[in-house]
Amino acid sequence: MPTLKSTVTAWSMILVAGSTAFAQQSTVTYAYNGLPLAILPDSADVITVATIVVPSALKMTKVTAQVQIQYPNTGDLNVYLFSPQGTRTKLLEHTCSIANVDTTFDDAAPSAWADFCPTEAGRGPFKAIEPLANFNSNDSSFGLWTLAVENNSSDSRSGWITGVSLTITGTTQVTPVTSAQTIVNAASITGGGTVAPGELVSILGIGIGPNPSVTAPAGAVPTTLGGTTVSINGTPVPISYTSPYRVDAQVPFAVVPGTTVSVQVNFNNQASTAATLNVLAAVPGVYTASAGKPGAVKAVNQTGTQNAVANPAAKGSVITVYANGLGVVSPSVAAGAVPPNSPLSTVTGGVSATIGGVSATVPFAGLAPGLPAAYQVNIQVPALAPSGVQELLVYSNGVSTQQGATVVIQ
Image 1: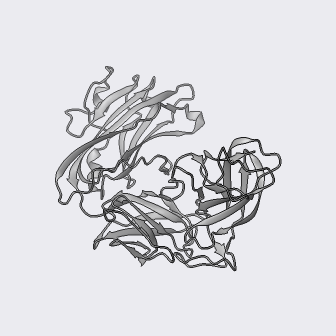
Image 2 (image 1 turned 30 degrees about the vertical axis):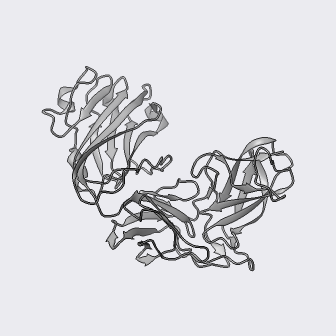
């Protein structure tokens, strides 16, 4: 089975209860709440994944998984559960030749699903092929859990994942907690588990900063803020914002694509477990009016007005867009420093853009003068761009910004 790479696509920030002042026993339940997910025939060579955000930080002592799958022959399927740290437990693997899975997997069950092969919906609980106690050795429950289902036996049958939920028991954690998958592009809130040179990342976690939050003052960005430090490969990096659930920090421009980096948060002399992230040449994102959500880009028209339905950009004019994660620039600027007006630092990896699917000229892409940790992209609206609200995509090193970001064209 290939390695799974999950992307954080919808952190609704339901981390509202606050971190506890002392450790205590707790049980939480979280569920996948999206639409049914298709399980395709073997010939498609696709693994279907359902993800569950667990915003609670527990040192786990017990995990149970409730799984609902509509599929005509379970003997075709591999069903695996992955923790945020990548630990894998096999729930089913070519197990029983019956229709559907509708049960709870629990190490304390009296018999295994593979031995019983239940045909009645909701029968159980049952033991999985491998113990869910495998997850007890992980650092924390916090992060993105993944149920992976693969049909690797039938080219004629297909089905659906219709429901997944996790119930986790453990001891609440009072030290800072984060994970690789919850370190994301600060503009798009995507790209979990990856970073790029110069990228401003949002580190999502629990107990990682002060309450109330603290924002860095104007000017060069400090490496300590509100009792929080973030270290990348052991070296403190600039922090522009810190709170109990989110810290924004800038990745050094010197990190090397194709390698990995270690990221660790320290708050009030309490350190999180280090998270390992893959370094890419670019992890692009654009800033929108609703941070991390689709919709209007924070774009300025050539006339100096904010791009909006009431102020569309004229075709042939230049709009200014603020972006993140575009990669290395030249001449180089230290992370956290204020980029100068002259000389301008431009992105070296090649930047392009489309508006409404039409290629657009990019006169400038580089660090935004006077704005630490921000990129500026000037884009000329194509003469053939369609009018109205149109999707904007910016590409750096061949990788695009998030889908659903829009500008308005006359």
